[in-house]
Image 1 (cartoon, rainbow, N blue to C red):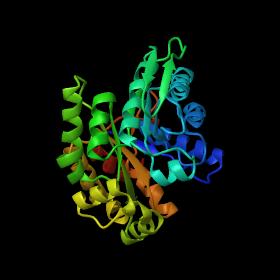
Image 2 (cartoon, one colour):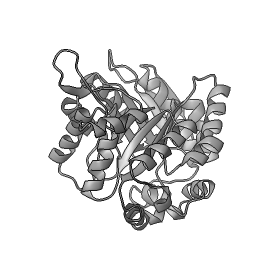
Image 3 (tube, helix red, strand yellow):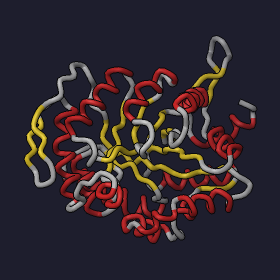
Length: 325
């Protein structure tokens, strides 16, 4: 399972975000990801961060659809890919009614129809084809002239049954948050896979974002998440996931414990069908550093003996740490 890391960008000076990207490259992560949460612009930032973390794939998890017309978003994503030459995962999502209506002033009526129409426009635009969508929630007619830019992979932050079906039929996969092994294995993976198969698409990517803390005090990060993100328990789609996974709200989703405990939980996610992991470190500064180090993967070069980034499975991470790498 490939492993990326979500960089912390909320209230963080951009130079510190750059430092996080450099560390991710040094530790050997496969990819760096940014959310779009009212701070730095994710797509613009990733263009700059790629220079600090050469060779790493880039991803957004996720950019709200309502605030970015598909023609504009396609142009941004293709520009990012062409400017960096890195593989780009363009994660998009509906966001939530309080944000879309309360902050942006847009109607959040018929969100699943909006998602379908948005993806129907975005897909041809990213493949240098004309979009010609005259929908009930949006109109998108035109092309993006971006010669030589490779189409980014499109992921959707989807959790509800209808949005998962649309995601499977019109994108490359899902970027999930809050979902644990039970939800993945019994609900998300089969729903998404069937929708993709019915639409004649390849097996979908199952990208799972997980709040993780390598710690000797598991209650600490869990309580912090419960207090900070407690409002998520009031969102129906999240409520359903918490119920499926038999956890008591956001705090119950945190993977918190020592290295052995965390590795075991990650293996459960992989067995449940996850194809990629986005590490979202939480806890004290020391706990977050310990978390980032657990997922580090460095191998010595043949010629110099210096440590450099490498690709390796989760089971090989702990020995690397024990060797002091």
